[in-house]
Image (tube, rainbow, N blue to C red; front, side, top):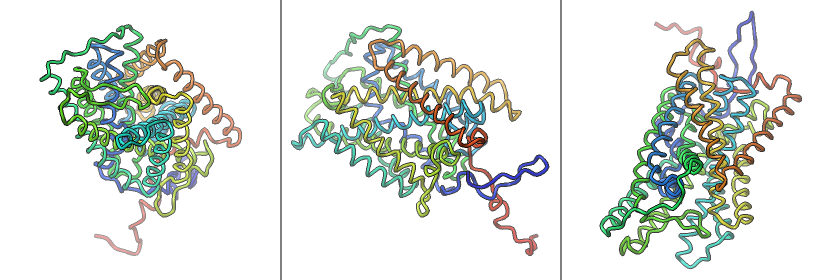
Length: 492
C-alpha cells in the first residue's frame, strides 16, 4: 500500500500520499461520470436484445418484469449512494462492503463484482463483433465464428487503446456513442411498432409456459439489463465533486433505464422485430413488412447497437480495471496490477492483463459452443450472478456501515434488508429453472468465487496484515491541506 499510517497516542496521523495515488483527480464532469454508468449498462443494446429474451419467458408479465427490476435496482442505488456520499473508493462495491461487513464478505463482494464486470465486458465484445459481422455480411464477407473472432480482437484492441490513453477520452467516447445508439434504437422501435399496427398485426401469442421458474429466469434476465449502473463509483477519485456527482448518477440511472426498457418492451410486443437464432447472437432484423426502408433501418440499427456494445466494453472494463487496481494496491493480487501509467494516469497494467482475457474467453467459448446466442446467454447469466452477489452484500453492508458510524435510520435499514431478501429470492428462483443455462452459470460463479476466496486465504498467509489493508479509498493527504499554506505569509 502506498503511503503509511502512523499512530500517535491512539490517533491516526494524516497520510503523506493517498492509497490510490496515481489516478488523476477531479477531471470528470457529471456528464462524464453519468456516461460511465450508462455505458457499462449498454441501454440501447439492451432495448433491442433483452426484451426479445424476456418476453418468451415472462409472457404477458414481461413489462411488469422490467418495472419490478427497475424499482429493485433503484433500491440498490439508494444503498450504494449511502457509501458514495461518504467515501471516494475506486473499487466501488468492493470497498463499500468491506467498510460495512468486514474483509471476508468484502472480498466476496470484490470478486463477485470482478466476475460481473468481466463477464459483461466479454458479452459486449462478442455482441460488438457479432453486429459488425452482420454488417460486413451485407457486403458479401462470410459470416461465422472466424469473422466474429477477428472482429472481437479488433474491438478489444481499440477499446484498450482508448482506456489506457485516459478516462476522459474513453468517457466522452462512450457517452457519445451511447446517446447515438439510444436515439437510433428508439427511432427504429417506433417505426417498427407503427408499421406493425398499421399492417394490422396482432401481438404474438407466446407458447412459452408461464411457470414460476420461467418467471424467475425472466426476472434475472431483466436484472442484467440494469447491472453496471453503479460503476460510477469506480471513477469517484477521477470525478469532480465526487460526493455529489457520483451519488446523483447512481440514483437516477436506474430510473431512466426503467423508462427506456418499459418503452422498448411495449414497442416489441407486436413481434415486428424478431431475434435471429443462427450464428449471430440475437441480432435483430426487421421483416419485409416493415416497408421499403427495412434494409436501411436494419443497417442503421446495427450500427447503433454495435456502438452500444463497444461503449459497454469500455464501461465494464474501466470499472473492472479500477477494482483490480485497488486489489493490487492492497496486496490481494499482485502489486504490479496496482501500478498506474506515469503519463496517462490510468491503471494500464490492470487493463493490459484484463483485456486479453476479456477477448479470449468469449472467442474460445464461441468455437466450443458453436452458437453465439448460447455464448451470449451464458455470459449474461454469469454476469448477473456476479452483480447480484455484489448487490446483495452491499445492501446488507449499508445498515451495518451506517450503524458503525452512528448514522443508521429506519429507511436504509428497511431498504437494505428488503432488497437483499428479494435478490436472494430471485436468484434462487432462477437457478431452479432446469431448461435454462442459469444453473450452469450458478456453478461457474460459485467455482470462480471460491477460487477468489482461496486466493485471498493464500495471500493472507504471505501478507499477515492483509485483512487490515483491504477496502482502500481515496483519503485526504497532507498535501491537500497544506498545499497553499505558507507560514511566512500573512492572510487577512
